[in-house]
Length: 294
Image (cartoon, rainbow, N blue to C red):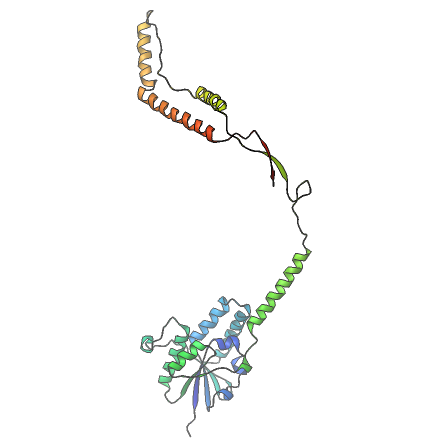
């Protein structure tokens, strides 16, 4: 009588959410004379990724333990019997089939696992190739490629990590509340013992016309318009003519031109106008008392 063999490809989630593979009664799940539990490179990569990047510390620890366990097993070779008639098989090569021919995507974990299973089925025609997973997406895709799918029994499931995380969060919240209750309650108050302070303020009012006129007079006095220089030089004496000529020559180099004087005075007129407008529109703040509450 020909012996039967089933090759079982397992999902990485089996290592994260279920008991260790040598603690599972495989002969209750699969009826065959010989059972191969196939570990693919993509499963190892997924476990390595979970060991480092999983948000849950518990799942990171589970991934690390699974990797250590598989590493110890692999020291005995690529085929290791863990219980009677049940062996773990390590595949070390990547699938060589054309993913597009089977409508698979190399960037997807599930598709990589299915590609391994397809190649195994094509090589070992006399054996049965199946997949064990609790993942719905992988189950649907495996069945669409004509694989039998077994879901691991709930009896082998590990405690829900989410429950443990929620307990930890509640404990941290409780500790935080205890800590907050021991802190003094700070209350801000002013010197009058109240939570507010009354301050006398002055309500602004516009400048009067006489005040604007007086202020503008001071502004014009301190900022006068530019006028041409008129220097009278006597040409009397032995050096009079020479002195006069030198002074006139120097004035040509230093005295502002009529155009620059005109430009400056025009800009000054605009300044006078803008400043007077400012005084007319902006109120003075030295009058009319009012109360403000801070």
